[in-house]
Image (tube, rainbow, N blue to C red):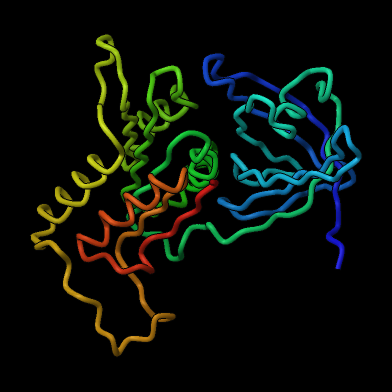
Length: 268
């Protein structure tokens, strides 16, 4: 069965990292008053290449739902058809359109909201930005219910930190949001965190357990409880390349976390 296609018109395009060639896009869906989706979902963009072959690429939505608009965060890839099609002005100027279908995906926040660790690298920060916009909307009621929310964002260089000022401002505004950017190849001028994301996720888990008077690893979940009925007081959401996702999952497994506590999406 053919999926319904929507026409999305580009309202704004901004290069948010010249070095990494990362672009932020704002689109509106034509002919619709609203375009509803859950934070963490993605859209699939569709276009014909120079050989007349249909190309489709999935992109996580980098914003919470607002009227008929959605936002994307995309790295331009050398010789990549779709990222170039989106990023290059001759192909997609402001006012130009693309075809999409969706929303799709199950990389969404568990309910009820709990303490949560968001772990991302590169453009894996896109769904995390959508989560945060939904949890802490400006001018609307806070949906976090006072739960602690950590964003551990790993990149190689400071120039690769996307939405840095936005997340820093949110951390200043919201006391239960904790922003932890970390660099694996920082130069001497960097005064922030260093190392891979696993190092800092481990610290969060260990410090939290210490405050709560709990020992690690966590005791096994009662096997008599059906998996569908399991609820936890903390979840981890991971998005990025496979090696990072696998590394964080292995770390959490070592702390005794149940696989249902770990929600992940990888894009390679």
